[in-house]
Picture (spheres, rainbow, N blue to C red):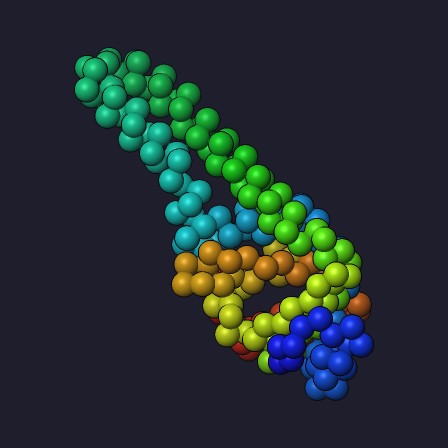
Length: 187
């Protein structure tokens, strides 16, 4: 994998394409891509589920402790729980949306992106920046109806998205899935 980055002449693209198994995706990232990725991560990865459940569980525990300390009746405890836990879920979803917008704001300046992936890794070139990564940087991936989501770190803290709409040919989606299956764990 070429790690020089910023190849304006596309040398790394041609190196990957010459392997025969490379797939190319051309797309413009959107905030909705990152929101979809973060919601999928929250549903399917252990760290994502933990992050999504922290606020509702904390709210339920706080209401229960407060009700016990104040000797509140069962009705007060029940009403407080019914009001607080859904509010905490809503806040969690709003938090994911805010996080998605922040992540998007970091990649938005890249503009239109071209990503080429093969068994060694992926090279992504935008209008203003480029980067490359070996598959060892990611520990797993998950798939949504519209995206491939790469998860990095021991607790899947990092998220990279590759929209399926960027596939140059319909078969490229299946070819990328095969490459990812060979190199990463599917979540």
